[in-house]
Length: 451
Ligand code: ADP
Image 1: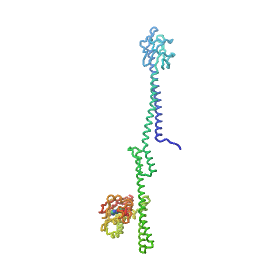
Image 2: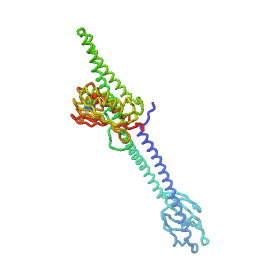
Image 3: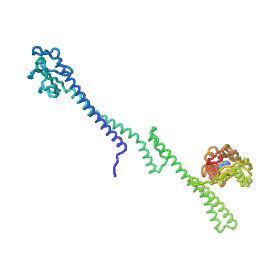
Image 4: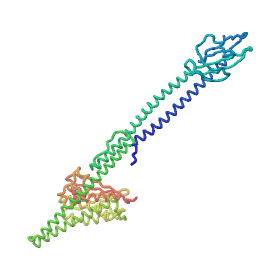
């Protein structure tokens, strides 16, 4: 398998390589440029001084009058020779000995006195006398500067590159730390199956830290979904266990020799009741599951909601009377909306059933329907047992029952179904309740959920 360098190493290598190349090019350019400029300056100065010396030289009766001559200017030493090459000025020997032929208008370098010299000679005639003027300037100054510059580059470039590489490595290493942590967290989750783990927040607000936040939010949602699923499975099995246990014990009892005909009948009736309960739970669960998977397609139609409410209320009147609960309808007529009739009936039915079921003897239930701008408001108010504030949010959850013993056959799916139906119709639900006094369930529905 091809082993790839880490991103940190690749980024650092790339930038360091590029930096080395750039610095080398820069230094090479600087060295040649400096060399060229200083050589040019030296040459110009040398030629100027030599020409000036030729100009200022005077010959009286064949003798050189060097009064006006600058023998040393701008780093250039000037020498006068006669035609046969003897030094005639300066008379005081400056101690520079260079072995080089006198050549007219030729620039050359030569060594003398342990140094390199740039030399320029000019031949001239004055008053019938021929003479040579030689200018010499030391090259060691520019060579020294170049050497210093070269040494500086030799130490400076690697030092600079080292600092840049270390800095780059450190920055990329830090920047990639959250990625490492994310990988560690993901590994820990996979191996330990602990969905509660999170990527630690380093407090910076850079791109990777934001990515860490997004991963955490995703883990949060996954954990919630996973826990909901776990809770749901355990709730379903719990809900189904009771009726199946009853069915089983009733069957065993009915089959036993001591059970007479009336007991068998009673047992069979109990079996029937429990199997009806199971089938209700299953059908509600199927509907909710289909809703959750997005597989449920409502049958949209224009519904007279006032009539629908009245119909459901009439169906439940008998049950209310049985429980000595007074039923009041305050329905605004001709409230129309677009919705799924069966689901809307289920919504009203669930709310009214609860209002009767969790009522007190001699209590009352009021069903109100009124129009709102763009929709309608349905209110189911009861004077029942009420719901404690801490339970008011929970009652919408699946299988949640405030008090299973007082639930009287309910399986805790009614209100989650109401909420789902309202949301499917683009509406929302609200609960106002006072414990021991009564509750009001409000459902707001738009006239047309698709608008
Ligand atoms: P259930 O089938 O148990 O009635 P629901 O989802 O319809 O399930 O209701 C959940 C719980 O909310 C009920 O068990 C009950 O404790 C509480 N509840 C619902 N409606 C009322 C109400 N009108 N008054 C008091 N408590 C209620």
